Amino acid sequence: MDTLLPAEIWSQLLWPLTRILIFVALGLVAASLIESLKWTNHLAALARPLIRLGHLSAITGASFTMAFVSGVSANTMLAEALDKGKLEKKEMILANLFNSLPRYFLHLPTVFFLTVPLIKGAAVIYVGITFLAALLQTLTVVAISRLLLKKPKTPAAPPQKAAKKPTVREALKKSMKRLKKRMKRIALFLVPAYVLFYILGRFNVFDRLEEIFAAAWFLSWLPPQSLGIVILHVTAEFSAGLAAASALLANNSLDIREVVLALLAGNILAAPIRAIRHQLPYYVGIFPPRLAMELVAVSQLVRAACVIIIGFCYYQITLGL
Image (cartoon, rainbow, N blue to C red):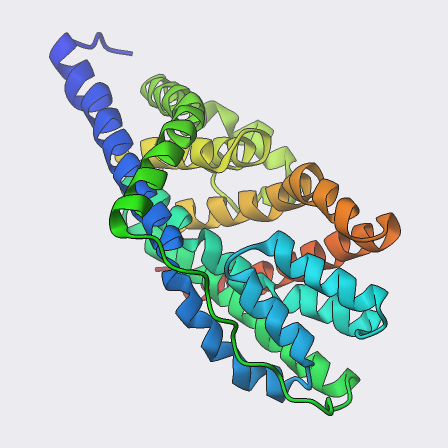
């Protein structure tokens, strides 16, 4: 490795990292504002035709609308309906899967504004693929529901009126509070990961990973440089995997297609681990333990299958490009 001058360290490492942190902070504020101002609520009205098409009940429709605001409240609504006998177990499972789309939209602003500063054009492709996977899951649930469920006697209820929207000033104040908390955690993973991958790239470490990477048969279709992205995505946090991807894109170790595929692989492998760590505990507090485990397992299997299908289509379409 050649010796780096202070000016090169600033231009090649410190300034790019500072710029990324600035854009990430701005993006998180924007994402929080979108959520606080309830702009996602307008999307709930689009679900009514799907609810009718899938023979889903008014309770499922209300739960879907509520999921745009709070996943916990939406699941609580389903659990109460199940306990009172107003909802069959099979519809409750399908409703939980159906609610994945509003849950996706809840996290979409944060994911998008976090990925764009780090991986730029690859962010649009990655977010687009995950959105298509969520849409595929929704349409699949509607099709299965139409086959399994009888047409309800009462039509699906229209979306509930949202609570009074905060002013822009109130939403901004809330966003700044959340920013301080979230940026500390993001920076804790992002900065060390970016610096580490920059150094590894300078030492050509990734060339030496080929033999190790080849042993990982289920990831052998990815280039060896992608291993770090996948590992950080699974073992650390999404922002750490993005930081690694950003560094590898910056030094031309990977192209956009390879970064997108690596992030998708990390997404599929990391999701079950994070679901057990974060999703299962509060599911057990809402549903009976056995049912909670069933819901988490089914949702992860269906989600992974949809991401794999859309990801495989992207892999085949871009093969040889």
